[in-house]
Amino acid sequence: MFTVVWITISRLFRVGMFSKYLLITAVSVYAVSAWASDTTYADLRAWLTEHAYAPADGVRAGNYLRDDLSKFRPYLPAGFAVLFDFSNLTIELQDTQHYQASSVYRSASEQFSGTAQIASDGRLESYTVGQPFTGSQIEEAAPDKAGYMVAWNHIFRWQNYGYATEILMSYVDAKGEGGGLSSPGLLGGGTVTRTLTVYYHLVLMSKLAQKATQGFRLDASDKSNVHQKEYIEFLDPFDVAGTKFVIERSLDPMALDQAYSYIAGERRVRRLSAKERADGFMGSDMTLDDSEGFSGRILDYSWEYLGKKVIMHVSDSKHAQAEFFGLGSNVPHDRWQLRPCYVVEIVSKWEEAPFGRKILFIDAESFNIVTSLIFDRSDSFWKTVYTMYERSNVPPGSDGSVHRWAATVSIDFDKGTSTVAREAPDEQAMYEEYTVAAMRRLFDISNLTKGR
Image (cartoon, rainbow, N blue to C red):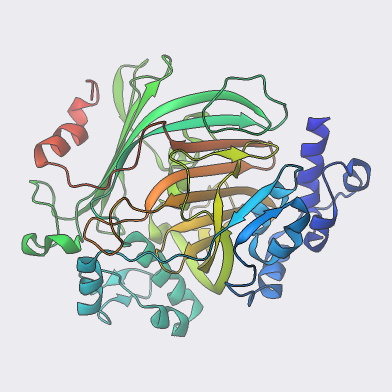
């Protein structure tokens, strides 16, 4: 029965009748299964137009149930919408919160305001540090330039020094009612087919407002044009333990990433190709470029600004570890906000890209990408990637404050599967400065064959 219902719900989302989904419940199997056409990119654009001016105070803070879903229709992007239609749904809505970046970042943004420019090919020019563009600059620019402005604001948003955390990454098949491997925080239906434990570490090397006396970069004997480095190591289960990745990104937007992997079973280090970045990462529903909604290179895509839109988002998670319920254990069991977002459309310039286009909802205050809707090359809906955040453990606006990562979920509607990545129990993303010696050990390619 569950299998039939999940397929039915997927079809319900795809019928091009988005306005009717709230009237159909998961038990309406026979009526829904007769619908054959898919929801398309055009349907999403129609939804954006219809609800463009839904206000941030359109629903009062409080607790809501499944029967109240119609109130939230203007705030649920198409990829999210069908996931909420299940019997024990509860929505805790809080007032919209504000998240100040550190005082040093805000001061730098004001000092260099108006100096950054978008070149004809989308490159960021004359940028020093802080937030490159103001909200008024974005809204007054042509859609193509405004799209790149939002993109660069996302890249150079306030993240302190980057972060490190331990992550549980669970693969969930919605076509089942449990019985698979148990996994903390997954409270709904579906079968957990696999859970991996991952150590992740992102270090920002340049454009650091808090390092004005060091040229706005870390004091490391490294190439001066490095923007960031990422380290990924799989700790569990045994068959993937010791698999590691190191990814280095240049400040030069035209330069290719330097990405290396060490597969413990092969006992060798090798370079990653562009195609591998677009493949499912370690067999999951995510790619390397899906991290936090988008982690690719800006100039690999064309960017178009579509306007602003208020959507639902978990921006102040109340749990020490994110919890999920719903038919596929992929809906946050948490508190939500209605948050204004910039909406941009991106299309890959790579002819072999597996998707056609993505619609990104980027928080207008933090510039975190909160939701990504992915369409295939026929413009039919394919996947959703969304990210949850939580408040910093230090006062807003202080130098160590940051909007902390809590979870990222990728949902493949074609397969009925999800990848739920969230902080491991008793873990918390730490946005701290790390010693030069520790970073050298972590990111040295020759050390990939050794323990962390």
